[in-house]
Length: 194
Image 1 (cartoon, rainbow, N blue to C red):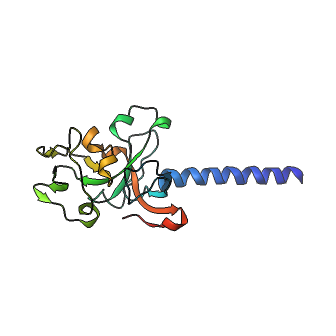
Image 2: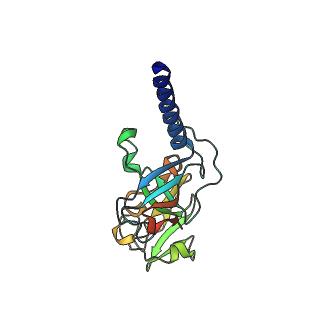
Image 3: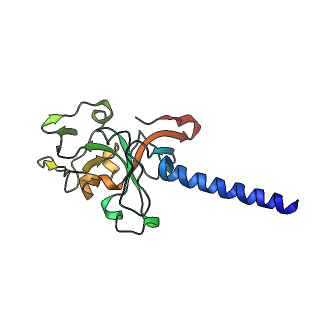
């Protein structure tokens, strides 16, 4: 009788662990926002759900991604591994969260606080609502940046305190973890991420 109870507990723990691993690998992951780079959209301390299904979950330890529902779109808030973290061991990589601004093949320019894509001002409310500073090697007002194929130009909503594509370049599609979709903590900030 005692052996049976212990065995049931062990089986329950193993099943729960496998379930958590499957959910984190293929469906969603939780993150805590550490910095002010996405204020006011995301505040330090916010805990969020990131959907891996949006763009397709990446299989661990192999360069393969399952199909997703879509590709990153302009204005999406995405979680990814930035170029300077890619060479770190997988367990030490620090993911970043920013907004997708420039899509593959587009020309991006920051001018007078506004974003221009292919010489047209971006009017999407989730982008146009913010002032973008001309900082970093890729953020100068006289510079038009061409986004390489399979890569994305990403910026923080709080431009003055965000280290983003203006400084370190582009996000490779293979390094995108998922789309930030929901704030689940603290209770007063529960809601969808726009």
